[in-house]
Image (cartoon, rainbow, N blue to C red; front, side, top):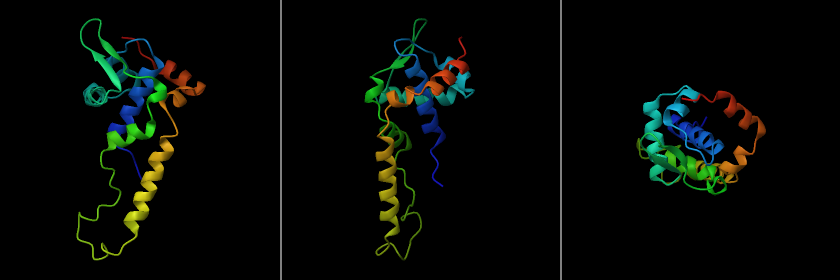
Length: 145
């Protein structure tokens, strides 16, 4: 079973939360408390998303986090691929494999990975935020600080 890193999961949750508050600033503390996750873990995720121009961050009393771009220009597959890094499902170099020169398994798995990312790129943040049940759930978990 393929499983995304917690880091990627948190990145997608942050984008959803911030996207629901478009035009407003939200705090890291607010997001962390709403999702019941560590603010320290979240800090790394937010920093990475800001560095890659998905988020704008501003420090200080009037600071907060906002989307850096329109939700319809944030493709979910791109975010997953960026946050996951290499996404090696099979690492033929980790341990010498006598099948390496003739094995079709790595190509098959890489093809599946590519299809996975392409499928996710069929969704934008705007697509996901268009879900009424999702909107209601995010509003329900909001903790104002």
